[in-house]
Length: 123
Image 1 (cartoon, rainbow, N blue to C red):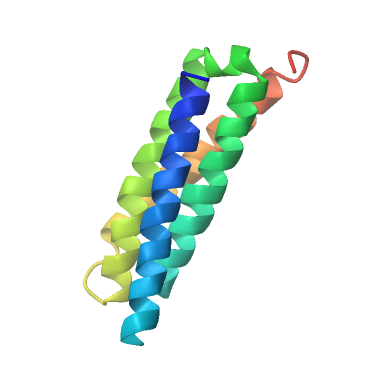
Image 2: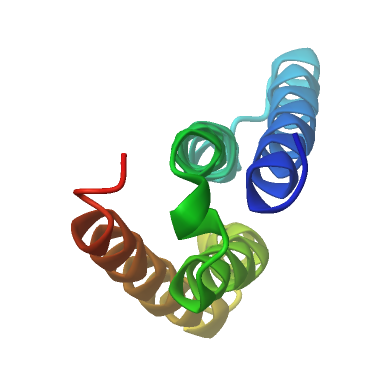
């Protein structure tokens, strides 16, 4: 497996590792202030990218499309903005990055919905 599916599944595994390490660090320190970061990274990062990877593996035509690549690019940017943004917001520092990441992430999900919708007869 190569291409978009591989990238998504590798990303999912890396996001899971970072999310799990954060969870262990919170448990060890008994400081759960960043629990929303842990939750968002595991759900959007691990679960989301795992599902994207499986879909793109099963529907290779979607993975080869410009829209599919745009979706994964937007989803990646969304994670990279949202996760530190949620941390900053939770610490009371600034919500701007979390807002930007949220907007990019929901746009990425709209792109994924379009990818799936446009490829319904190719599965």
